[in-house]
Length: 470
Ligand SMILES: Cc1ncc(COP(=O)(O)O)c(C=O)c1O
Image 1 (cartoon, rainbow, N blue to C red):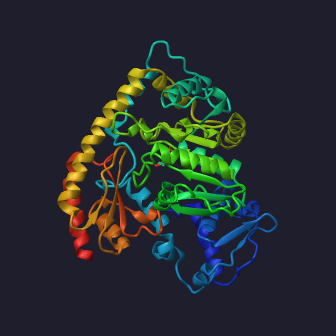
Image 2: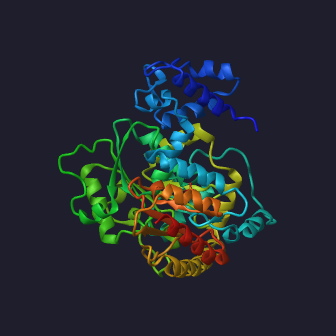
Image 3: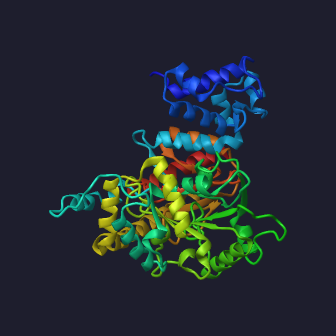
C-alpha cells in the first residue's frame, strides 16, 4: 500500500534530522515550498507539521516559522532510533500510542470493544431519523446555515436547556460539530499562549490533542484535590489572568465522578472571585440513572462565567455531529465567527434532524428513558462480570449513569504489554494513561458499545491475560 503523503513528509524530515542535514534550530522550508515539493495541498503539509510538533520534533514561532526543536528528542532521533518505535514505546507518549491504536483497531473485524465510549449501533435511533426525513411535510433546506447555526434548532435547544434548568436565548447558543469542536473553538478564540488551562485529572481532555497545539500551559488538578480543597481550590497569590477551568462536573469521563450541587456552587463562586471562566462539559448529564438528574453548573446562581457544552453524541448519535455552546452572547458571536471560518457550520441535514428530534418529546424523552434502561441493564451485567473475574485483582466504583467503569488494578503490571496481548486476543481495552499519565494502573471499561453476550467471555479472557503478567 502506498505511504500517505503526510507520512512521506514526516519521514523525510526525520531522516534529515537523523542524518544531520537538519540540526536543532534549523528553519524548515516554508509550507508553500513543501507543498510544491511534494505536490500536495497546504493542508497535508500542515497535518505533517502538526504531528511533528505534537511529538516535540519541531516547534514554531511567529518570527521563525517552523524549526527543528531543541528538545532531547532530536538527539534520540539522530542516534538512529526509529521515531515510530520511540513514539510507540516512550511512556510519556503512551497516550497517543494507545489512542492511535484504538482508533485503528475499532475498525478491524471481530474485536470486542471493552472501553469504547460510544453507543452500540443498535442503540442509535436510525429508524427514527429515517422517519424524520421521510415525513410528508419535510422542510429540509441545505444551504449554508447562519453562523450560530439553524435558528429552529437553537430554539429547540433553548427549550431543552430550560428543561435542564438553564435559561438562555437563541443568541446565547452556537451549534457546533459535536462538543469537540466547541473545545477547539474555545482554544482558538479565547485562549492565548499565556493562558493557564486548569483541568481536572484524570480527564477525557487528555485523550484529544485539541488543546496541545496552543502553547498555553495546562495545570492539572486531581479531582480528589479539588474535593479536598473545595473551599480554596485556587492558590491565593497565583495569577489567573487569561485562565480557564475545564471540567466534566456530572458523570465525568472516565471516573464517573459527579460533584454535588454544593460543590458545583463553590467551584463557580471561586472561579468568579478569581476571574476564571469555567468550561462545563455536560454531555453525559442526561444519562443519570436516578430519577432527578444533577443540575448543570450553568443552571446555578452566579454562573454567567460558565461556558456550557452540550452534545447529542452520547445520548442520540455521535455521527450526527451535533453539539452546542451556551454562553454570553458576545462570546457566542465571536466563536460563531471562528466556526464560520473553519467549516461554514455543521451539516444542515444533521441540524434539521436534531431540530426535529429535540422539538418532539416522543423522540428525545422517550428515547433517553429507554436508553437508560438498557444501559442500566448492561452496567449490571458488566459489574457482575467484573465481580466474577476481577474482584481479587482490583477495585472500582458503581457508576450512577452514562457508560464507564474506572478500574484500578491492585498490583502494577506492564499495561502496554497487556494492551498488546489483549489486542492479539481480540479485545480492545482503554488504558488509564489515555486520561492521565499517572494512571498507569487503571483501565477504563465501558458498557455502552460491547454486546451483552460478549461481556462475560471478554472479562474471563482479560483475567487470564492479567494473571500472565503478574
Ligand atoms: C467529556 C467529553 N467531551 C466531549 C466529547 C466529544 O464529544 P462529541 O462527539 O460531541 O464531539 C467526548 C467524547 O467522548 C467526551 O467524553
